[in-house]
Length: 286
Image (cartoon, rainbow, N blue to C red; front, side, top):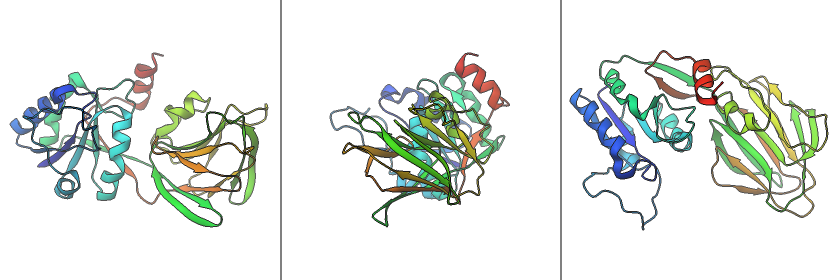
């Protein structure tokens, strides 16, 4: 690799200490580095004046990789831009669990491997999400982790139906539904009782949230299925759709969320020989 872009999370990497350490390691190995913000920072938050920041949309055009510093949320935020450009992502965890991050903050010397192309690329499936309101597509998005339909804070329950290729597979009242990729199986889906699925698999994992009966369980759909989530009775309350923990979009009775495997995959860089199961045991203290 000759050129990388690094995106710090200023709220986690105070004064960009980790980013600047990584920059020194990479530049001493002959790699050109640009530092860019991946999201807008509160104007009242003071950024270090001695760090030169570049424009992400411009620098990403000629980058060989994107290195994200933070937790899984930071990686998810940056993943869509990298996926559209077809470049791989490497996560450095300075958050909490950090399932998607390849390195911990104390392992940054391994970044030298990028200069000699000593790495592998792990491809992860995505879910293409469309929100249909009154017969029209009003929102499109791509999920690396999950798409979640959930009740508002004051709603009692929402009625949810799930169809696979037009055949009803699930119908229940509850707090909502999580549609996760294998990558997202260790996130909200797992907390709601869903299975842990190897991230290299291609499946759509459908997990009810606090279903108000004993029937619904997680359902794993094959990647060629077209999934349709129908929003039923909300009792004049609010319900929302959120993709990868992003902005919550209000949904109404009769709305549909259409899901199918995305055409593009997210590429994650691997510098270590650890397996997915090593990470599960380490992160979940099993």
